[in-house]
Amino acid sequence: MDKESRLEAFEKMLAAVQMDYQSTVTKMAQLKAAGKEKTATCRQLMGNKLELQSILSRYRVYGLLDTEGESPGV
Image (cartoon, rainbow, N blue to C red; front, side, top):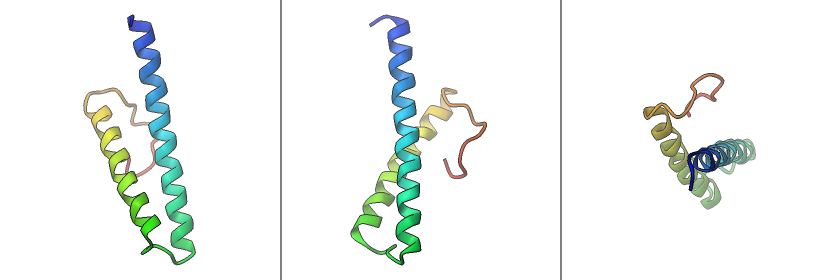
């Protein structure tokens, strides 16, 4: 894989992780609003959110993620 292809693949992966994170946060907010924050679904989403946060944090540590315009807690 050449450098351009690798960079493009990284950018796609980063965008997917960010979209998954935002989707998870939105779903959790909907469950919380419905009073279902203790359900198995909500707990699974919390696990997913923590995993995605970890990935995004590693990108940030290595300088691969801009910090401008990010959601709080990312």
